Image (cartoon, rainbow, N blue to C red):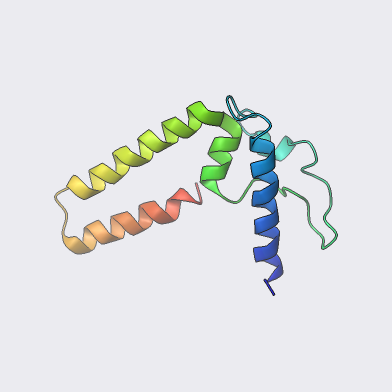
Length: 108
């Protein structure tokens, strides 16, 4: 079985994805993750549907800003990735920058 926090996170993501598809084009608005309809409902296992945010930066971006925000995020990610790969860095520094960037994608 999944640990409670892992199972809860999967539930949060599922809930957020359902809400995203209710307003995919323009999203719910900045900081709307805290105010989603049904988001403060309690789960049988304890905790709220969305305790404060989706715990996933990419999902939060798409949920709040819709398709335009998602496209902007993709362009920004591509630009940062290209900067890392084209920078005059040692292989170790490049690997560390890439790892930090990939880790930050889910936590901003």
